[in-house]
Every structure is written in C-alpha cells, then in structure tokens.
Image (cartoon, rainbow, N blue to C red; front, side, top):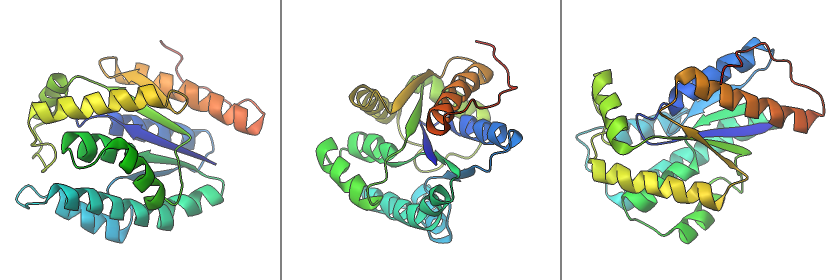
Length: 220
C-alpha cells in the first residue's frame, strides 16, 4: 500500500515519530507494519547486534555490506509481503541511511554507485515518502547524552562524523523533493507528529480517492 521511511541522525527523534504514527494508524483501523533497520527479521537482528556492538571492529565496506544484507532480508521477508497484503509499512531507517552514514560519514562509496546498489539490494523498492527529521549534530549529541543509555558503536562516533551525515541527508532531500519531507527536529514531538500525520492522510486520500478519517490533534 504505502512504504513510509523515517530518517535522521541519531538523537533526532525519528524513531519516536515512527512509533507515534503507527499508534495513530492503529487507532484508525489500520494494521501498519513497523520495522527498524537493521533488524526486523531473525537474520537482520543478528546482524544488528554485530553492527552496533561497541567493541567490534568493523571495516567501513563490511559495515555497508552488512547493513545492506540486513535490508535485503527485511524487504524479502517482511516489507514486500506486507505491501502485497495492502498494509502500510513504516520503516525506521532505510537505504538513505546507508547513503548518509556509510557513503558520506565513512566515505565508502559515491552516491551514484550507491543509488544503483540500493536498487539491487531492495529489488527496486523505493519509499513512497521519506520523513527526514533534521537536527544539528550538537543538539542530537546532547539528547543522546541526556538519555543516559549506553552508546552503541554508531552513536559513539565524533560530532564531525554526524556533520557529514547531516550534510548528506540535506543533499538527498534536495535531490528527491517529491519523496522527502523535511521536519524541523527542534519542534515539539507533537508538532512533528501532526505534520507527518497530515501528510500521510493526504497520501492515503490520493491513493484511495476517499477522505481518511481523522480525530487527531491539529495543533501547528
């Protein structure tokens, strides 16, 4: 039905927004599939544990390939079947994360190569909409520190790494304006959720030709 992805640097709040949208859709009679990357399948979760383990040394190219292997499994095992059943799929990260983190953050490959590679990894699957929660690297780091949770291998990267990642996301949003929706990560959680909810309602109305019932908040 619809593949909606959520992107942003660690600490931006994208995972919260994916969860809130899933709850909103369930309240309105939908049966959305909410998955995360890497993860979502037995194999993908095992790959996740390796990729995020702080004490594991992972070569940048190996990192890119492992993230992509987890994505291939997730698409084949869960995302495509859900879409074929007419469900809405919400994915916390998708291949744009690889372009931003491994492509720009690690400097592993150029965007043109990655674009072709992503199509092979997902068998041509492209998100219908990508919600990019934009936040500066310093504020995101402060939020991660405030949360007080143990940092994984990716979250332990220097602020300069996240500057490169954020710049790559900015470029992606400029290059794909019809797919990306930029969201100011400094706004309140509710305000961001309302913006996403309104856009999703529009997408569903365009797809079905009928109004999508809404009883949610309409605060700006």
